[in-house]
Image (tube, rainbow, N blue to C red; front, side, top):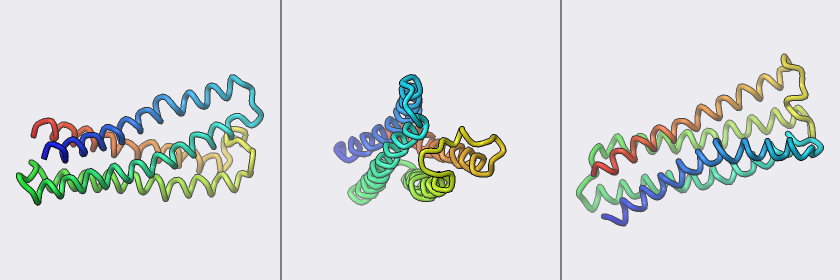
Length: 164
């Protein structure tokens, strides 16, 4: 049982830590360093780098979500059943759904807007009232908000896990 709990906590830590590291460290650093380096089309390059890192991290998040659900199910079968089992599974499925929505739907929508803008053209170079810039901004905000679901859900799961 200890190994299953450990695996679930490890998956939560990887998932939540990865989200925090990407959003609070990697994104600002990538954009700042490239901006200071005066690289041609720097914002486009920074966006491409961060977008690829986020794309690859989504795969990690899917694996973490699956691992958490699996460990909860195995623990329930082997006993004793984790406290608030159904709620934990529901929260994990919600977290995984948010990751899938972000990784598939939002990412695809952002790629479509970027394709409409054109290769090598920064979103910030468009006029503030440009429909493509507004759509990108809306999708970016939506992506950030959706990533809060795994963070808040993960905090709840960690809380319950440490109480077991």
